[in-house]
Each structure stands twice: as structure tokens, then as C-alpha cells.
Length: 158
Image (tube, rainbow, N blue to C red; front, top):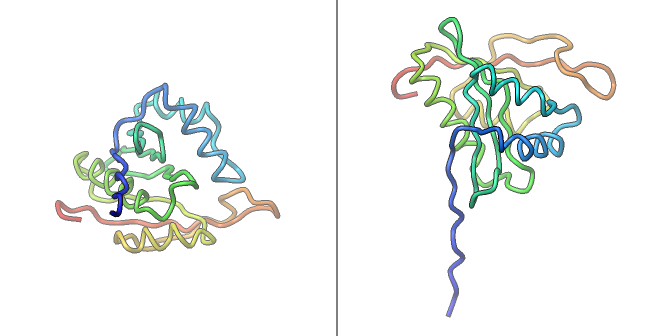
């Protein structure tokens, strides 16, 4: 008899202040130059649309979306390294895109390191395209790294 592994319960929900420690921990384990706990706290306080991906009641990822002046901007999106390649990035991005569409914006933007091939592949799959490059945007170990600016037009079905 083969035992069936129980599938994890995965949901995306609004980030709460009590999630900040988990979010900050994932951020530190994911990036060489992470956002601070205070930056995430300030995003919540500023009213940005902040979400977490819960996996069996543990934070496994998060995203931060800013909506202003008829545009949306993905400020941060990340999946815990222990849970990558399970489709959670897709799930987070789909939720963020839904939130942007329901905020009645026509376009959504983000910056991404050109060296982040996994993120670039996800964004391309979701219909983002490069519209600009920001020179020396990101801190890097050997100076600065450029950022690709990606955009996507939002429609009811995109």
C-alpha cells in the first residue's frame, strides 16, 4: 500500500505585524543586501498592499505592492529558499496582479536584477516586458548592479 503524502495548505493573505519577523528572516536568507525589518514595517504603516503566502500556517513568501497615481509597482516579492520551485512565486505574483487590477490601474511595474534569471523567467511568463534599465540601481559586492525595469499592461483577463 502506498501512503499518499498530505498536500500542504497554501493561501495568500494580507500581511500582519506579527508576520514581520518571519518576513524579515526570509528576506535575510534570500538576499545579500536585504530590506530591514523597519522597511517592511513602514510599508505596512504606509498602507501598501503587503501579502504573505502561508504554507500550513507558516510564512513561506511575501510581496509588497504600491498603488499610486494610476500605476502599480511591485516593490518586493520573495519565496523562502526552502520552498522555491513549488509554484509559490506564481501564486504570489498572481495575487499581486489581481490586487493591482482591482485597484483600477492600467499598468504595473517592477525592477529586477538582470542576474536574477528565475525571477526574469517568471515575469516573462506572466507577460512582463523590459521597458528601461536603471544604471547602478542595486547594491552589489563589487559596486552596483543595474536594474531592468519591467512593465505589464493590466486588463480584466491579464
